[in-house]
Every structure is written in C-alpha cells, then in structure tokens.
Length: 71
Image (cartoon, rainbow, N blue to C red; front, side, top):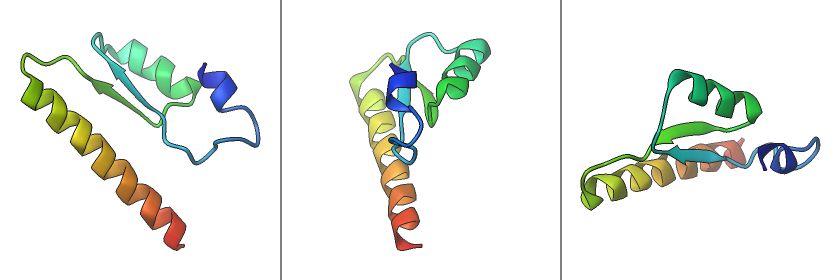
C-alpha cells in the first residue's frame, strides 16, 4: 500500500502516519523506509490516552503542513 501511495510524482508531501500495536525498532525502520512520515505505538490501556495520542498526531502534522504551505 505504501509503495502505491508514494509512487513517484504523487503524494510526496502527504503525511502518512502508521499506527501499530507492536512497535519494534525493526518494524519502525521498515515503515520509514517504505515512505511513512511517522510510526506511532497505539497500544494503550485507556481510551483517553489513545485519543491524546491521536490528537497529538493531528496537531503535529497540521502544524507542519501549514508551515510548508506558508513557504
């Protein structure tokens, strides 16, 4: 899926965030090598913590994208 989304000339600036419940260094490196913008461990014991992580992801990438558009 990542190679289709990141094909040359398409979606080069679209952030792709991988959410996983089994984050290892090897898995993170594989995702980043395939074109992911970020890899985030989604495992959490409570919903509030999970929503906090999702909010942080959106906040970060919306800020980054806004700055890129302003250039």
